[in-house]
Amino acid sequence: MPAHKMTEDEAWSFLGSVPPHTGKLATVRADGSPHVAPVWFAVDGREILFNTGAQTVKGKALRRDRRVALCVDDERPPFSFVIVEGTVELVEDVGELRRWAGIIGGRYMGEDRADVYGERNAVPGELLVRLHPTRITAEADLAD
Image (cartoon, rainbow, N blue to C red; front, top):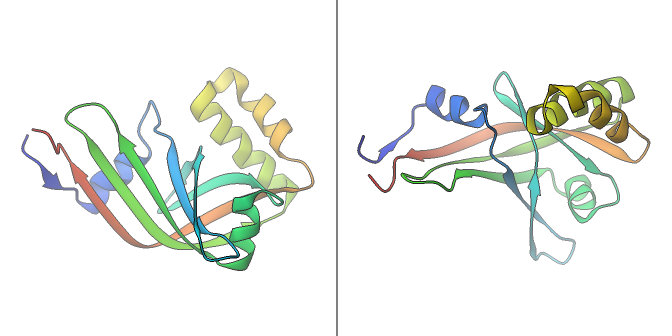
């Protein structure tokens, strides 16, 4: 199939694909410089969720400025990518944090390890981040 812009449904299907791709989250540091960090994530309807520590560079950046960009790509030929821009909501509810940490951990490490990741990441100082998209750019089959 020749290179093409993905439809919204294709983009969300790509984001929720198995095996999952790692996202690269872009935030802005306090001094205005860029920061990019890998994140595991899950899709909930038309939103993206991930965890981070409140005291990490990205955790501090998200508290200061809720605007982010997340790039998810398939590094294998014929190469595809989705870039999601939007704002985030920070959730500190331990029940929600545990639920989503388990879903995310299970997605990347297997269902048999979901509870381990849920328990490990549902602790004080961890945040559940809900990304509300405002713009999506997505292209598929770039090298075809």
